[in-house]
Structures are given as C-alpha cells and as structure tokens.
Length: 412
Image (cartoon, rainbow, N blue to C red):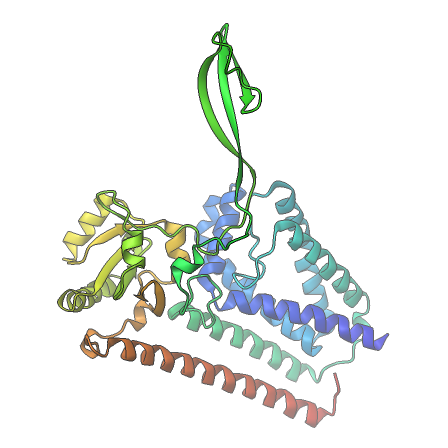
C-alpha cells in the first residue's frame, strides 16, 4: 500500500507540475484564457483581474504539484489540491455540457483536449487525490518544518521566475503553431486523405404565403407554383482543421496580400501589434529604424494590427510612423507572438526570427548580405542562454534536494 500511495502522489504531482509549467511560461496566454472564461460566463467586469488570477493560479498549481511530487507537507498539500480539483471538476463538466469555451486551457497550448476529455481527466485526478487525501496521515514527513516551508517558497520563486522572464521576453518554450522554424503555408494546408468539412444544402421555397425547408433531394424543382426564397449551407461534419487556418493579411484598402507575403522569395519583417492603442510606443518608434533599413535593402516590412483604420491614422500621425499598416484578426495576432508589439522575420513563409519588443534587433547590426546569419546567431544565442539558465536552475534545485535528503537520510 505504501507503494500505491507513493505512485498516486507522484502521478498527480507530475500532472500538476506539467500543467503549471506550460502555463507559467505563457502568462499572457493564461490570462487570455481567463478572459474567455469571464466572457463566456457573463462576468466581463472581472476582465481586469484576468492576469492576476492567471499568475496566482499557475504558481499555485506548479507549487502544489512540486510538493506532491516531493511529498512535502502532505496534509496541507493534499487538502489544497482536493479543494482545487473539487472546484474545477464540476466546472469542466459544465464546459463539456454547454461548450461555452471550446478549449479549457488546462495544459496551455502544449496539449489540446476537448472539454469531455478534460472532464474525464479531472475525474481520474479527483479519484487519485481523494485517495491521497484519505491517506494523508500515512505519508512520512519529507524533512523538518523549516526545510519543507523553505522548499515551498523555493517552488513558488521558481514559478514566479519562469513567469516573469516569459512575460518580459517571450515564452521559454513555444507550443503554438507560429513557433520559430515553422513554415506558415505548409501549416495552412490540408494533407491529402484528411477529411474535409461536410455541408448540407438547405433550400427554402414559398407557396401560399408559407415557407418550407427542402434538401437537394426533395426540393420542388418541377413544381412552378413554388417560389425560391433562399439557399443555405449548414456544416454537418467538421473535417480536419490545419494548425494555422486563420492567417490573413488585408490592406487598409481591402486587398488580401496574404499570398504576396508568404510566397515572397526574400525576407519579410512582420511587426505584430494586436492593439495599437496599448502597444509600447518606444517599440513602435524603434520599428521606424527597422522599416527604413528594410526599405533601403528591398526587404518587406508590414505592421499587422486589428485596430480600426481611424485609430491607425491617428497613431501613425501622432508618432510619425513611416511604415505601412495592414489588418489581421486580433486572436491570430495574439497567438503569433505574446508581445504588443512583437516582431517576426519570415524567409519564404518560414518564421526564422521572433522577438519581444524588449529584444528587437538593432538595425545598425543588420545588413543586406549578412542579415540572415546575424539574425540566426542572435536567436541561437538566446536559445543557448535559455537552455543554460534552465539547466543551471534544475541542477541547483536537484543539488539542494540531494543535500537535504543526504543530511536527513530520508527516502521518498
């Protein structure tokens, strides 16, 4: 039975650690999901609290998972996790029944589950945590109270550090379809053999003042006493949806230039500002220098936003922005990059660079001949630095745990 108790806490702990981690490294995405919940349940007045709620919940989830995994303060931890699951399990049942939000976001963008899959997953976790809670007094202490509370603080600090870095830069790991290295046109294509959307055509005809609905199989095409009123297509079966299915760029004049940008043989910079009214002004101005470099070297530069035309013109004139603006879907822009504004570098439709506005490359280090290698080197250095920091942090944590275990001679 001791082994069963240990396996149960490790399984639930790992799930909570993973769930908390993938949301911690994408704090804005977690806040967007809270906003979706508030809108779906008619609580839009809570929108300003979306980000604080995301911060508190993700850190708590990560810390509770780490405590379960390590067996720290099992009485307190099991009680908190039980309360947590007792709230979210009925909530996911409501989501499954009424589907106000199609994706609960429990694993961020790393793993997408339907609402019913999420509910079943929560039922399993709830059963395990009830078992853990009922056996909470049988778990051996990890260490002294001082050490255990110190470990809890450490877990919270790690979670806060991950979230802070990802908020002020970009997510440490990008699980979204617009991650660096992806070819956008390929991700927009439906592979051969995959099912496509199936539609049913409904036809409406009137006779003697009464409108009747028909299908293509039974409509009165030979009876001239019926008069056609309307034709509608209704989705009856949803087919395969490519990872990227809502990427469109439209000029202020209404022209679709998506293919022009994605099929370009050269480089293209995309400045992504989903809301110009809330965008970082210094970054918008710095983008002027990038736009000038692009113009001098025949490189495309496009600013994509969902802001209205009138606001675009006012902001452009007020801050003397010299680049052109284009319209795209707000949700898509928020998905592409977690920064307002953010910057993308495309090469023949492939994302080869991605930056938060705090990390925009300096135009004076760019040039026509070596731009590609310098951009890639810039990205590689950041990735290496991130990997080193994560590795050192993990080794530090494991070293502390190893020292505690060795000192106390405790086996978990």
